[in-house]
Length: 358
Image 1 (cartoon, rainbow, N blue to C red):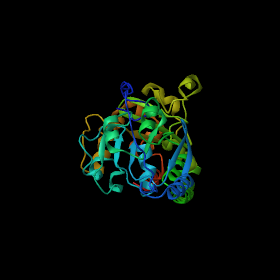
Image 2 (image 1 turned 180 degrees about the vertical axis):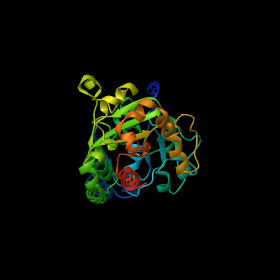
Image 3 (image 1 turned 135 degrees about the horizontal axis):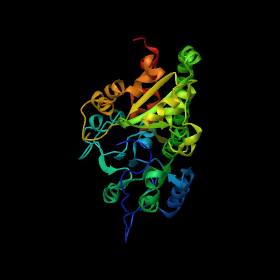
Image 4 (image 1 turned 135 degrees about the vertical axis):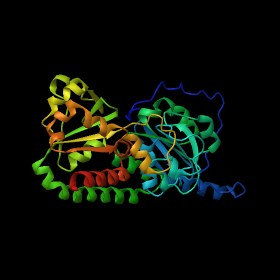
């Protein structure tokens, strides 16, 4: 299974809720036995504490301080936990774990250790359990436009819903920060992440000057290969920010260039032989039902990839292979985590592999 921003399998039809009565109670709501003048003052206070937030499917008003936040996908869980806010439920992009998230650090890749208590497992991000969401009575739902556009109307009937772009990290941080009333913290986090990249760029400057051309490949099962194009999210944009020149498909195959991960045949790799270095992002998630450590999770993604690359005559004919400049990195950290946490993880991995002498 290759990690990419498209639905996996057939999207389950949006559930129809014939009769839905949901009471959304603002955090600052007054008690019902107060005089009418107090009620009017409370209503005015509520309005003053409401924010209108733009997202991929329009605008949504969020009032007060959300306490019961449902999250559909790691792309929106990452900015939430980076802002030190806990969800009550989560739906992953791939069903790595069955049952409730009673031990999040061992159930949710990379982000689980940020979650300090058990939370509800809603299934998969593109077909979450509507029944479970209803039972939770959330006051905010976070999802992505490519996963949840078909469910937007249903989700919005349950609670204020924001559907965001999967890899627009800054916009997502700002939107979620506004929704949970932590805009200042979101801006600070953006500044810190940008500073990390500036410092890393200085560390990579000598390497970039001598070996600028980089070939970014993704593989779940060798020799099935994909090339990371201009829309491949953090996997590509971070290397560009460091000064590298990621290679794209030749013009003859440019029709594939608008997809984040465009297929490239093994036989076509010699056409990309100008690459000074190659990064192979392993995305093997097949038969991964659970994991006890992050090392186990990462090793599974890279299962047999390095050995098969080293045993393949075409792969070994490339100049980067001959020079020992082929690097193997788990794909999840940059494809699944396009925000501040993924940036830090990916940067550290790039430094460790590309800058550390053998």
